[in-house]
Image (cartoon, rainbow, N blue to C red):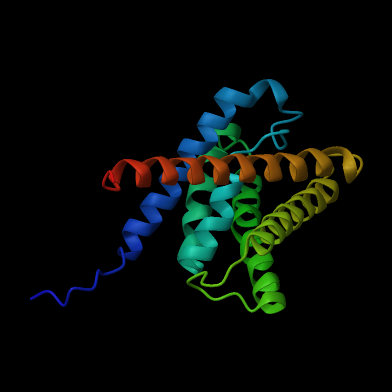
Length: 188
């Protein structure tokens, strides 16, 4: 018997979708923008950055875990498990940074889990905060292990790359939604 309300996807479906999208976007980004990468850790364009924010905002802690799984898989893609500790730490930072940023913005703006009332300016601030927190935590780790000699070496590229990737993906989603909605609306 159906009550007419749609049920949310299962946790397993959410994890599969988020981690699969992360891997797809990561490989696509690597293929399209390898020439603008400054290291294996930072690029001037990073398309999966938008997924970080959306997964956490829409799926909460399930989104964090899905990001961890996807980041872990792509860590294998980039590091071949030559340093499993690095893969785990980077996956953890990739997954937790957007949640930290979201919780900070939720407290500042009173964001609701369903995004009702989210303004365009709040979306921009959330995007900038996610990029800032992620870049900061990753680069703090890189400096602490000696992977980079100065904090700013990869921070700027990661921050800008996350912002560009987020805005490219959000604009593409907006365009796609507009396209789909225009095709599905009846002609007048």
